[in-house]
Length: 163
Image (tube, rainbow, N blue to C red):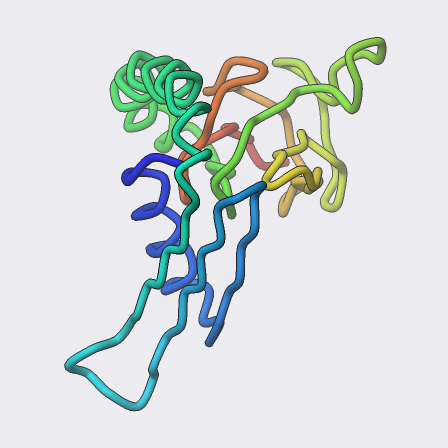
């Protein structure tokens, strides 16, 4: 796990309001504890790794490098899109998927009408698939993220023009 990924996880835990999160991935064990009573030290991170975990490191930079061009495009597209409708943002860090499985059709396309509660996409985080639902009824104006791309917390995903 890269340092940047750990930092993003810390930010996510801080915003979520959780008091403690334990994460185990293979030989990597991370514990993040928040101390809501003290302003001086709001978080403590205790990473515990085994030397064997360094082998997967070359694989991790590829998704991170792929995220940079996507973020640059979204930075340009998002301000114009926000004025046209409601922006649906990612509630978690993970991998964005437009369809429930590779052999199924996309949840939504540009121009589709959606109702409040309709599934727009799924975001995979730590091997769990989280359905992202529409908070408004309307028409999909833009899809701001490519399928199977990494997404950050609070990153714009869709623009929906309300009914």
